[in-house]
Length: 257
Image 1: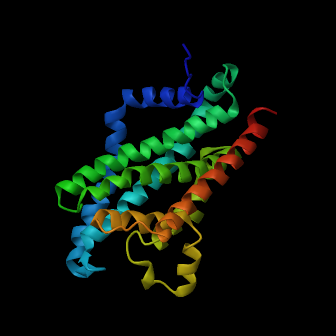
Image 2: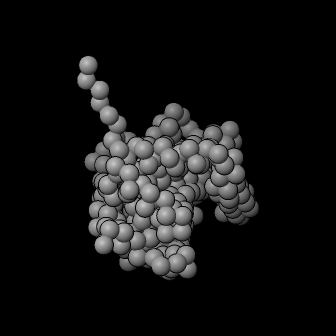
């Protein structure tokens, strides 16, 4: 009888999942309460003054953006601080590479775990949003695979930054120069149409805008299968694939030289 062995990267994913499970309640509270506080604080507070945005309440409008921002932040934190800890501080990757695992297995397992954490975190927020009537229809379940894609994309990008880092302080540059401006200008908190045309065109080159354009209609149950939809999904997929390849090359130079 033939027996098909799972890819070796699954062992890395399983190791991270096992460690996470031991402190899952604390981890969920950390990644769950902050976006929920932002959602209801801004949604109810500003929503009372703003009124409707794009023919829906500001709270409903904001919920899609918060989900996308949370998927990005969850995988980015995992790819920066926790991956750096496993690689440089705890030397866990050294032990993995001493086992029958290649660097590609380690990096791919880490990236798959980052996508999984984004799904877990977004799933919890999605349940709360549904309880408050902010989800319209079963189409919203497609947000979970989109969150996985977002986690892979931003986790891979974070690993590239980690491959250059010599200390935790280095990550401040990435947050200050890329992720924070991207959140503010990609339509998370307000429509991008309110921004100058040049800024809108610049944001179209970054993945967060495209994920927002997929998740928000899914929350409203109004997403249509079209060429534009696949175009939106292709951008974060391309970023994730390119960043993963760069991360492998960079980490190979750093760890195996």
